Image (cartoon, rainbow, N blue to C red; front, side, top):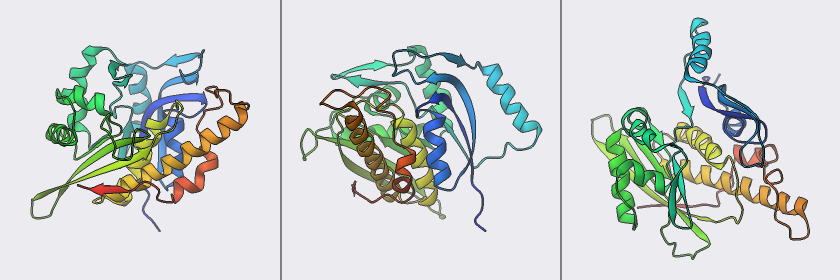
Length: 284
């Protein structure tokens, strides 16, 4: 019998839609993981809608929930999946902006990132963490080396402003993984991926990406190329299905609403389980 792999996912939760734990739990279960979901936030729906209601747990309340698990000796996990992927900010129209207060940046740099095995920042977040700007692929690789030196063995810059040879319709992502050999030597694998942009704003894609990358790096522990190809190919299928359904629901060339753009997760079960590879990673 296959050994059970358990994940503690500490993220937000919404009643309606797919974000946080709702976006991470289903794909991980489909890929064979047992999930305990600890909800840091409980909202009616994600904040991409005009309105939302709900509660935010404070640190004491989160600690109390974990203590309950600990008292029953069911707090043994192979992985912990959190929102610290790190969620700090992004760029719009070329300008970076933080989602979180700036005084949290030192906390990420000094406390969170050093204990992480895998981080998946976007370009803006990678620049914030490293204190360096990225204008070229070489600079991006140097930034990932800085992030490796902070602790994580796997770094994936999920999106960047770097130009693609395939044109402006494509987005560049980069990955780097330090592989530790039995003799103590360390080999670094670097990859580059080009993804077709989808002209829509989705919520929960980062949570879905982090969950699937965790699953596929577990299944392919020393092959970042294969893990990222499966992760990004599954993402492609989910997003293409979502935008097609959303446009059909909106009708008449109208812009789909946030409700219509909710990720078609259940409908994409087979693509999550066994994605047809449509995004190829180049080893650098």
